Length: 188
Picture (cartoon, rainbow, N blue to C red):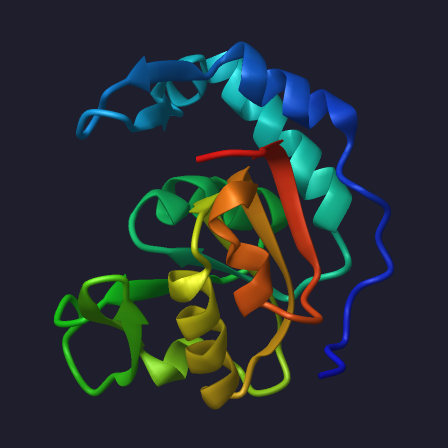
């Protein structure tokens, strides 16, 4: 699959440093054996978070027409970026959270299924959209959200993920896509 992508260099290394300096690792949360990577210290550090958003804005300015945030922590990252760029924010929500009419797509989880939805009128056909979320893990939510945005007429030109858990194989569900991961961890 050939996907149009903006001609952009890699994300600046200082963004990775900002995240790593403001990331908390919590062992055995939410269950034993899981290492949870908590982004709330970054969000709580106003100066660092502002520098982070400024860095993203500088990187993507002129290459996208809208920013799509994936529920729920993707909203936290997408909203200030959209404001900084003066662009529309598209919210992609879990099923049943938006009043109708909505477009929706179902996708498979490891143990069941889920649904993502958006209001079709929030997407302008042909709009170059950057998708943002906090974590790329298995890739299911991102793949479903891209399918949904494209069904609405968007041209998804890339994904920006704060953290990527490479060991969970999310990239394999997003072939041909530009994925900018600020920080990548080899294992989950």
